[in-house]
Amino acid sequence: VAIGGVIGYVANRVAIKMLFRPVNPVKILFFTFQGVFPKRKDQMAISLADVIEQELLSKEVIIDKLFSEEKLDKLKVIVKENLAVKIAEMIPAMVKMFLGSNPDQMIKDLVDKQGDEILDSLIADFKEKGLDDLNIRDIVKERIDSLDFVEFEKLIFGLMSKELRFVEVIGLFLGMFIGALQFVVTLFV
Image (cartoon, rainbow, N blue to C red; front, top):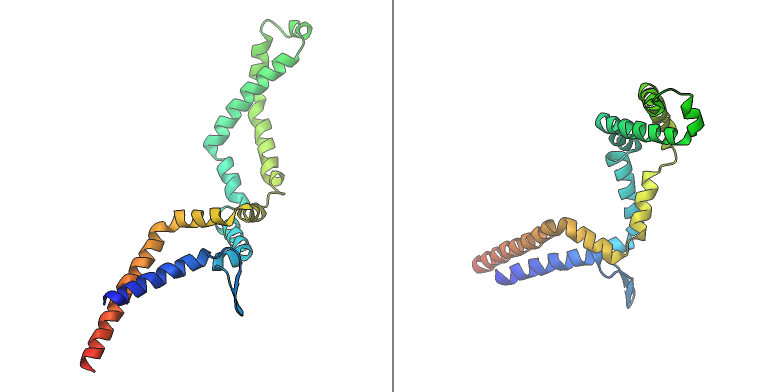
């Protein structure tokens, strides 16, 4: 039972390691060995990029998050305040004399009045045309390709350490079960 447990645990541990190791191909006699993930990194990057773009993070999702109602309200306030200040700074002092007693307030009122309409138009144009060249798939694939494989391995182990440990422990118990089963079979046969 103990030997079966050790065999099951070691087999699963080695299988998990062989997903990532060896990083570079190693030739032994007529066979070439390389970890599954390093060997298929390009295909995995493409598949992962496709899943992220199609299921998790499409252009529409990004636009919806960027331009949610609460963010739009904050953005409009910031843009209108900055726009009023910049316009007031650009107008020469001589011209301001002809604009009345408080030209800065007049500019602020004008921006407040017309700003929402202008910003809504700009945001609509941006939503329609602004992210046409954004290719999430290519960005994700490029980021994965740029990772050193050891970093990629650490990333995967970091995300799935409990699950991989669970697989090792399951191997231990399955090995123990098979060892017990073999003991019973050999005892009665």
